[in-house]
Length: 400
Image 1 (cartoon, rainbow, N blue to C red):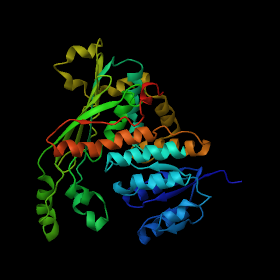
Image 2: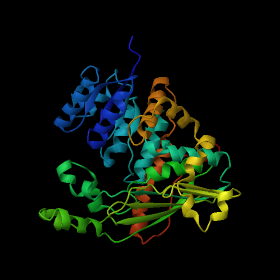
Image 3: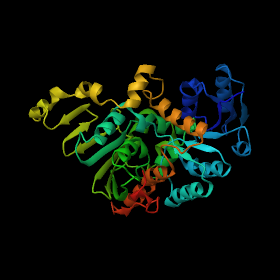
């Protein structure tokens, strides 16, 4: 008897295909009876990959609706463009399929409420596949924070700091959705990579919640300069004005008094960083120099000469490594963003297999994704504060 979890995958662009090849098909307990994308060539490429993994060749469909009524599919993975995430989630939830949804921001607060309402109506779980929650450093610092090593956490920072100019500029050629978003929208368009790990540390939706935000955006010069330098033969793009500011800064306040700063920085030359930064009453962690500063330890005397302690996180691995990562390192870290993709996928698969709730649930998904549309609103009003809805309707006070 085949006891494997049977999933469909919808959306086979760069992210979907990369995950399928490097992560999903490496899982021995999962089969993919169907693959779906609006482009036939992508479906064929995905079906070839599945077949090469010694699984039966999957059905290829270009309309996701053909999957909705299939009794042999227990859940779906959605790797489509941002604007389709929530509508597809709702349709598959209503069809009784577990949903694992790739990340991105919401286009409206109403969409986020629709997502929550769909879950509360159907009781079918949807999981935001936010891999950064499973990052080694993010989990270690969260583990330390839960033990009180950093004291009371007061302020957190994170960012999506990633030079995406080439990906955006060649969006037409690569059939990629980011280009249109950068032309027409201006806000924190990709908040969950940085916000997810912070939300875990601050117990968002579980004894705490985000209350309000304010966002401001810099001018938008990066893409124009890049296109002029590297794609001047594209007359249409040469004459396009981009709405998306080069750097967007968002400040969030929380019910328990903490503050969060998020930075989107994707259209200027820079090194990759998620800018993970946690500051508490007994110490702090900084991703960009990979260091822990802990009050009372010998190194704290060198606070004016901190550079020599950059990279000192390795000194704390044995004592504070998260148990999930201790086991993972022993078993062998898998491919996919330094192993994060494997961990988030495994948690989703276990939820489907055991018919249990998912670890990053609909309330997390709505709260994290709504930051995009609220940020757009705040930017448009010159940084005016905007309220963040409570998607739990007060349940955050007692949720575990």
